[in-house]
Image 1 (cartoon, rainbow, N blue to C red):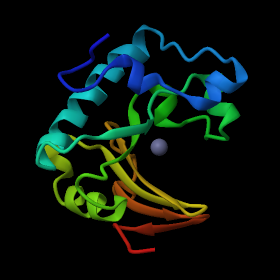
Image 2 (image 1 turned 30 degrees about the vertical axis):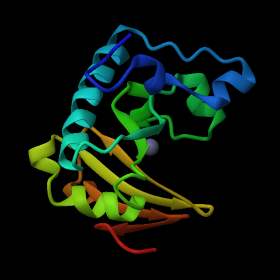
Image 3 (image 1 turned 90 degrees about the vertical axis):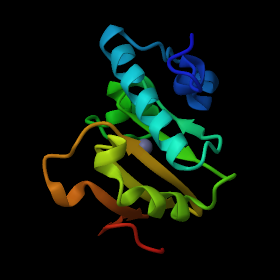
Length: 152
Ligand SMILES: [Zn+2]
């Protein structure tokens, strides 16, 4: 199923963990509706990055999948509101996060997190605006959280 011009339901629900553990990762109606909104946000991000292909490394996670990957219960991934992405044709995850951070309102990004964990880096994008404005643009490095997009 095509969610938007460049994003399919398959790529926004693909999960190695689900496949390995035989877990169901089919979104319900509410999550599916949110995934459409998430795909629209990703389209705006894609256009802002000059039409470079966005690779979604993790999108929707059912409750079981979210638990299996150690995600927090309140994760936007479990609501279909978030996608972890890399855009190697544009630049490093840090460069991608930097290019998006000042444009969150224009692009309809509720929250952007530059994540650097265990030697891997990616950009978390959510359509949900956090309750605390300070959490809207942040960097997570291991167990440390920093305000803004920071080189770590
Ligand atoms: Zn994420």
